[in-house]
Length: 379
Image 1 (tube, rainbow, N blue to C red):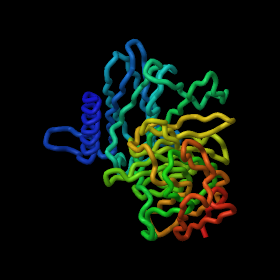
Image 2 (image 1 turned 30 degrees about the vertical axis):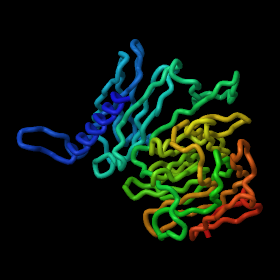
Image 3 (image 1 turned 90 degrees about the horizontal axis):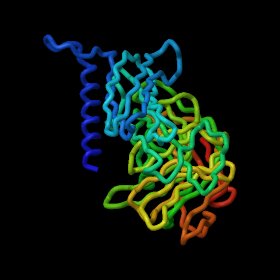
Image 4 (image 1 turned 90 degrees about the vertical axis):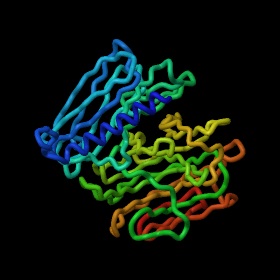
């Protein structure tokens, strides 16, 4: 554990130094990076001796005339590998992917980042670290996007490999009631103070009016389930749902976020226009699953120790973040499933549970049946 922490600290410092060096042209006789040169320090953990992994850096827009393409292969030798990547990168969005033998689970499989004003946007100072987890160190199987079987056979658990959104802003918990500005976070939908060990929801995926640009001015629209508790003055939570974000293209993605990692994990949307997801505590632990359902099977998106055995609050609501007074459009998104895991079983989230409803203007909630059949939209 101590060695892992040292590696992460070293990687973080190297990234900071590399970013700072890109802002200086010359210092005496010392040659440093020009403003358009970007250097990334990458750590790869877990690559076994005899195996090969390949890093590929490309433009996230996949435009042939944008950015640079860099590819590096490394040989495994059983201990952490440090890889330096340098490239001349115009302001744009980029994707750094790691390819390795199929036996490994990649956490993550890639990093998304934005270059703006000739620097990488990395508000949380996240180091670029890939962990390759072999079969002997896990009790689940990687679920690849290329796997079309959709079957959960022989009692196996399947987990998706995600992409960390390096340039995304750290998420914040829902605010105290009555705190709302024209900018910042807005919420619409039910939230309960009922102690629970899980929240289950199903909602439609719509195309909201998120502005997409290459800048630090970010916004997003999301619909998700979430379980939270206040521990030692800090809010702990896990959430999973779909989102459209300004720092990617005009596409909806499944995402997961938790306070154990404080990172946006993005995934290709697996189920089209309807997404069914849940967060659920692993009995007897403070670890929680984030999962989605498809074809009658549940697939893991994340499994993290967020430090809570019972959630003090549950959410099945929409979330909007805007950096200015322009509020993204939000065509009606329908929720027709809302359950809470209480006293060892799933139960419909109805009026028997103490519930409040967010209606942060200009967004509103309209119930057919409180609190599990409703739609949210922008007035």
